[in-house]
Image (cartoon, rainbow, N blue to C red; front, side, top):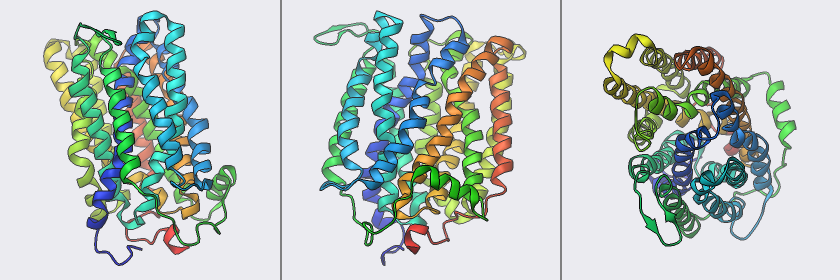
Length: 433
């Protein structure tokens, strides 16, 4: 229920404050996905091996996000059930993140050690950060709220790509930091993460729901079995759908910057621009996509976006092919940026509305579990996809990864057609309890 309040307006300010947690993820994720493959490429020649190592964060996520989310469901402290994880693990993530480029200068072993530590902390905190919003916002407004927090995530990505990444070429020698070339954005981003953590802790107060302590805490495996055994398998179809759309997305994500540098001749500072185009689109359209879905329905919004993205990816395969060489690298790079902007418009419609559909089916005591299941499937896709697409690049070149992703989006479109629950007008399970 909306507790007698009218519309999403009364929850807007609180949602923006919660969104600072997502801001930290946007800051780190884009710089990580853009530059870690380039750092690894200095030591490794095969893209398939780079793709395999880029799944390290996803492997940790599969194990850590569901279980830490479940632990936070069952945590009771004076500052809340999510906040202890946030104020401990986000600063540790920031510290590890700052060391990435310096470790990359030393050796492959140093780089792998630092990114392992980073992802141990960052993937552990992701579930509690995400679950903070549905703990607080009624189910009928979660598409709008998810639009707001994804806007904050996109803002973090823009700060990283348009702002901080432009400093990659700055060659200075500073106290403590040393030589800044190909390094400075990482410690600066870490400082921003630390400040955002302070803001979340200072201004977000977790709310205790009536009956919270009496609600049964359902183990993760039993929750998955229950979802699979339900007569209406809407939650299962959503989970399978998101596996496929993340299978496509995560197959491209680690290689866009390498494609821009190796094929289109972009500089290292420009390598982040395709990701920036996606982030700008998400910043502009995350909130509108939530309102659109409230009007036309979440399922329709997601399925329509999947079809458009599939068409964009087919166009991407053309840009990556030898057929487009006559256009010149400058024009192709510009077309790639335009394509990625359009991709971001429709991708955020999927992300904004898929999580709320799952949360609509969760009780207050299992919001963390459903959050964990979302990440189990999405990170499972992220583990398996980059090695496949890296091998595709080695075999047939970059056009192959775009066609692979397009096929994944069409499979997700088909599976989403089976979903019958999770629309804004339905009363959320947490509010029926």
